[in-house]
Structure formats: structure tokens, C-alpha cells
Image 1: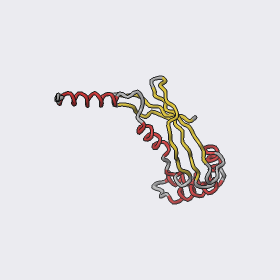
Image 2: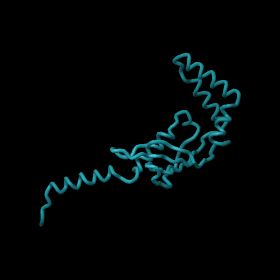
Image 3: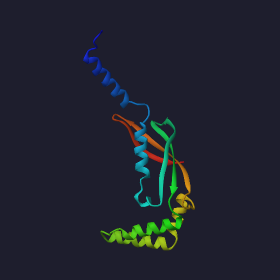
Image 4: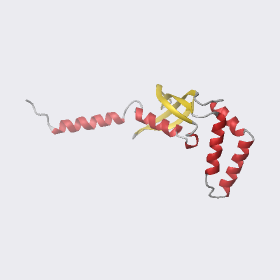
Length: 156
């Protein structure tokens, strides 16, 4: 029986670590982390939830890796209930200074005049409780010396 020297295992470990860091595409965990960062909006957590996140395509273009992602947005409330929830969240926030108070006042004006509803319809459509909106976005990653780094997103 032949004994393999310890240096062989060390070289094998170092080369596999190097190859992992030099991967041709971002790892799935990096894609998921970028998606969570983009989609984790505390203001909307009681209005919808995100599910079924998956990568549908990926390609290199202009020194960036483009990951085409798809996800479902499940609405937990109707649009009118969503406006009421957002209003309550804004009212519950403490104001630290004059600028915060001014922002809350402008927000209340926008809500009362219907601009908030227009904004929600523009962003998500005229949704009802239980509606599922399938969306696609493209994430851009830049390859650096330390591996892939999330750079930006664009909506499809």
C-alpha cells in the first residue's frame, strides 16, 4: 500500500480553494444574498411576500456577469388595505428632527391626495389579496481579486 505524502493533500486543498475563488460565475448563495438585499423592504413586509426566487439565465457581457432572476410577489392585502398599513407605519415612526416631521407631513399629503395609490399601482399594478405578480430582474456582478461582487440590478 502506497502512502501519499501530506504535501499532496495541502497542494490539493490550496488548488481547490483557488479554483473555487476563480469561479466562472457567482455562486448561488451570492445570487440569493443579492436578491435578499434588493427585495428586503421592511416598509412592504405586511403587504407582500417574495417567494420562488430562481436564476433563469446567466451570461458574460462587458466584463460583467448578468444573472437573470425570476421571483413571485404574493400580495397579502388589497391595495386599499396596503395604503392604510403604510399610513399607520408612517404615523407610528418617531420624528427625530424637523426634516422627519416635514417628510411625514408631505407623505400624509400624498396619501390623502391619492398619490400614494397611484405610486403603488404604477409599481405593482392594481393588486388584490392573493394576487401573484411574477417579476424578472437582472443582477450584474463584477469579478474582483476576491471573487464576484454584486454591482447593480435592472428590471425586465
